[in-house]
Every structure is written in C-alpha cells, then in structure tokens.
Length: 467
Image 1 (tube, rainbow, N blue to C red):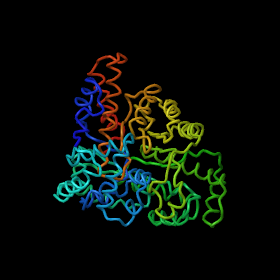
Image 2 (spheres, rainbow, N blue to C red):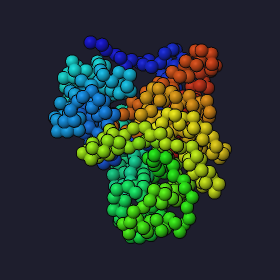
Image 3 (cartoon, rainbow, N blue to C red):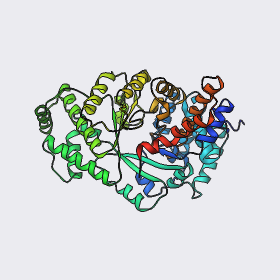
Image 4 (cartoon, rainbow, N blue to C red):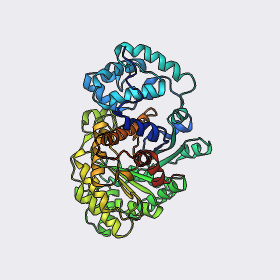
C-alpha cells in the first residue's frame, strides 16, 4: 500500500521552497478571518461520533464529487448510514485526482489522525475504525481541533438577527483561541428575495423596534452593528453576485421600501436602486465603526431548481458567474472614497477572468493611509486550489504588492479544513522558491523569508487588529 503521499516537502520542489516553508511559514499561528464554523459547537466543545459527522456532513465540495461519480443521494445527504456515506466517499476519493479534494483529503487524514495511507475502497474499513477510535478518545472536540492546528483567531459569520450568545459564552470560558464574528446583512439588502418582509420583521425584533420605513430599516441595521461591535465584532462580509451601484434619490428609495412592505411587486431597477442605497449606507457605517468590509463577488447560486427545492441552499448547486464587475465596483468604492468613508476593504472574485480586474482595482483606492488598505482577497470557493491560488498570487504580484497581502482563510463549515492554510503556504513558498532557483529573485532568505512570514501571519494580525 502506498504510504506517505503527504510528506514533509509535499509541493515544495527545491531547497529554497523547503527553507522558506519550514523556517518562515510552517509554524506561524493561524488567523482564519473568514469562515462559517458554527459557534454553538465551539461554545459547547462538541465531540463527533464518527468521521462522517465531522468530515462529510455539510461539505458540498465532497457532495458534488460523489454525485458526479454517480453515487446515490441516499449516501450523500440522504438517510444512508454514516458508515455507508463514508464508504461511498472513500470509493470516490481515487477519482478526485487533480481536484483539490484529493490533496485536502489526505492532508486532513494525515494532520488530524496521523493516517498516511491513501483513502480508497480497500483502505476504507480500516480508516473508518482508526478514525472512530480516535474520535471517541476524548481528544477531538472542536476546541481541541482548533488548538491542534495552532489557530490564534477564528472569525465566524452571523446574520444581524443573531444574539451572539455562543460568542459571549466562548469569551467567558477563556478558551485559548479567540473566536470572533463577522456581520453578514445580505438578507436585508436583497429586497426581491423570497421571504424578505418576514426577514425584516425578524430584524426589527432583534433590534427591539418596528420597521415600517426605510429610515427604520437603517436604524435597525445600525442598532445591530452597534450590538455586534460591543461584542467584539470588527468585520463584515457580503456574498453578492456583484456590487450594486445605480443612481437613486432618497425619496425613490423610501418609496421602494414602502412599496415592498405593502406587499407589492418591486421591479428589477427598483431593486437595484434600493440595494445600491442600503449597501452604501452599510459601508459608510462600517467606516464609522472602523470595521473591515469584505465582498465575495461572482457566485451564480442555486442553479438546479429541482434539487434546490428538495435540499435547499448551500448543498452543492452553485457555480461561477460571468457578471460584469469593474464599473460598478469602481463607482461604489469611489463614492465612499470621495467622502473619505472608505474603510479597509477586501474584494474576492469567484471568476478567475476577473483576477487582473481586482488586482488593479485595489490600487485605485490604496491611498497611503493604511498598509494594504484595499486587498485583493485570496482564491476562494472554486478557486481555493493550487491553480487558482497561484493565479491569484501572480495577478497580485504583477499588479500590486504581494508583500502586503493578508493571506489565506478557510471559508469553510468544517473543523477539519484548516490544513488549507498549510496548502496555501506551501504553494506560496514553492512559487517564491522556484523564482529564486531560476534567478528571478535574489537568494535573500532573510528578506523573502520575512515576506513569507508576513503573508502567512503578520500582515493579517496587523490588518485586523483583533482583540
């Protein structure tokens, strides 16, 4: 049986890459500034009955691969047993070669469980037993898993209506790893989304107010921003197809919101005007509070209407969109900058065709007030793999300053996803090591090593200033 596929110098192709990784990156703490971990499970220090519960359930990356192979939904999200779901994933793994899932799978088995054999149908039964034994040993709770990867700070993502009771409980428990949250108000923005009025009612309840007018909506959102801020939040996040920026008047926006609250149909242009207004309001408020704002742009969501109806969102039916990004994004950032109300900003694109657009856009608004004030975010979702990360790093290097980059994040719901930081760090070090070898960069390990340490950890620590 093949062993040690994930060895010490995995992805490191020469001595310079090895030195950069092992001496300057490997042991840096992790600041995971955007993920979707459930804070309840951290607060309660949850343990897991088996590897399916911690590794396969909720992972739509794996689900898409299993469906492609022809695995029945019963053994993916259905009522199959946990063991049968794991065995079907093990059957799938050899077919994922050249997909990042193949690397991630074996990194995670190695780093968390010390398992170095390849996962496949032959090894599945033994690996199920090995992981079962370890998971029930009392050393694989959520907090222990975060400590195991040297996490210093993790930032989950919550809706404005969240009461943050689990974050409060974590803070009171004096857990070594700091756990913060980011503010995700997209449901308040997308006025034509199903259930919008019901959501606004729940937002009003959270803010202890009645939302009848547009001003009421803004007041309620600011109330929740203030609440999140008082609970240690200093980051927001938006997952949008594109930035909205249409001309509007205050009277128009108030009338559009009133029309929606009356249950009337909102036209597409009315929705865009409203979404533009509320997005600008939120961005100016983030600046007032000194927060970092994040924009994840470019996903085309819920493409399969039949399966979305059966399984709901975030179950593996999303893809890359081909939206036009540059003009509206530029106008949005410029509107904020013109008022000197542009806070620290991270922009992520899902379409790799937009890499150079984003890499050059950030330079328009880096005004010298803050190091790396506007960031081109790391490759995410479909792009958080070797090719996607390398292309993002190259675009940023060619058109900006990679030395100011704040590095990787997991953007994951899984407590076993943190080796993605290692994956990114190895790719970064190999990229630089290869250029040293070819003479394109000087063999100045002190300086390039510092740059690697900064991208791996120091830049994010300085940028976010998490408490």
